[in-house]
Image (cartoon, rainbow, N blue to C red; front, side, top):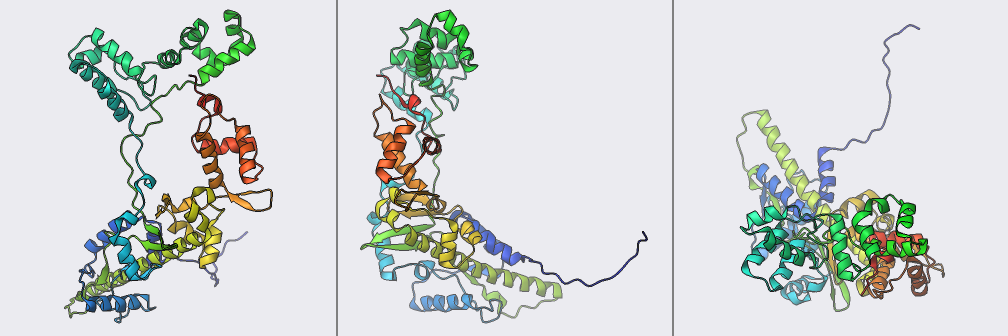
Length: 477
């Protein structure tokens, strides 16, 4: 077959994303703190962009109103976008209450979210143990030894230094270190500061009063690998146990925690700055966008002044920077407008949640919000990424309000997050000696919500909540 060169015309459509459009999409996904950093960076790099100086004059407010209207105009690159084309105070533009109500809201800090409803970091393992150490009646030398032991614990709660190293570091002897270590191992959580899994579990057995059973002590101290590998038959012959008795021993061993320090946080708090506040004022939910620390922008007066430009390259550079500044102002306005519309739609769709709490969270998907505000699902997905809202019931990520549905017996639906909240409530109120099984939890959910839920579904939700099984929750007193 002969090869030949041929020219032909072909008509095709292709979606091309301009740098400006890419910037607008990127701004949608940024959190408030990331947005502040991006705006500050642009202020440093673009000579035609400047921050509006705050001025309480009425004339300044009028200029802001004029500027906002200009930013909304289609021709954002024209000379009509004057030097006062700044980023209007969005608390006035995107708020479901008049300015008077906004001032009232910020003048009354007691109306803000209660301390109990705010995020707090988990107590660190070190801090929790040091608190118990200082409450103990120890000598000054023993206190120094205890601090050294706690300072050498892993995140799982195991001691990573030998007794000799602790003794050398504290200028004491091994005989001085051993009793302090034993005391710390009986702190909460019991078994912390152990040097092996066997030691950790044996300390917990002593705390529960099971160390008087030599079979149980031998299983933990000598045969953990056999238990892990499920080599049960040799153990049954060795200890002359029936399968029923052996399972009782297994239940006790499985109730122990081999990593007592894993439930504690690192001690470094995770700060969350809400992007939106939703307040209940006189029985109505009012939405405020958080603009704290976010600069208000305007085009600099430099581009209006007659600057002598020697070359076409200089003119092109100035024109590009002016277009970039104008587009950033418009993109920021569009971002705040989209965020406000999405939150307003969420408040409308999840009104029962804002009234009563997590147990009333309704099923919701991105498409519901997208259809309500007339935008694409991808836009809603981007604007709800890394965004937080402060509500009367605490601070939540916007993604939290989107959850799957479970069908009720009467044909209606309930949100999965509501089921999880109720599940957590049932487990929190259970008898520690006789914890609720997954099957019983399913029965309680059916009685409360009239929803048929399988045991494996209950187990899935329990695992998602990081709640152990009933056998591991059981406590022996």
